[in-house]
Length: 148
Image (cartoon, rainbow, N blue to C red; front, side):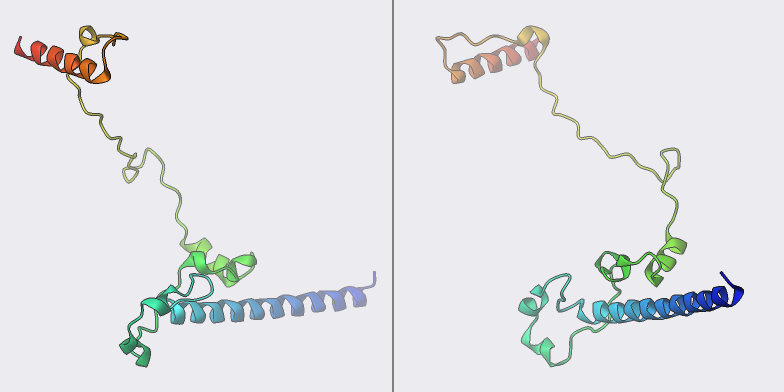
């Protein structure tokens, strides 16, 4: 390939990359504007429930206009790895917390209720007695073991 042809292709590639950056920036900015302006009332991504819950007085222009756009709602910006969305989030993302770090807290486990049954307290239910009789027998055994 000649140097002239290579230079033309290189220039063409550079101009296409610049055009792509401009388009992605426009998409990002328009998406941000749309998400911020429609957050209170509803939009294509979240749904239109905001319009049904809004009071008639707020329809006259008293609706809060700007709220920060949620990153999960950015379906257009997330569709391209070269978009400004990924350039912004790569600088903001922190390292995941390790179990050794003091900020890591394991999920608490609920304790089970401590029943008063002991190993010797278990009585098998005979076929002739009902489940209510069995429960009464168990309660009597537990109450009897408490008195000792």
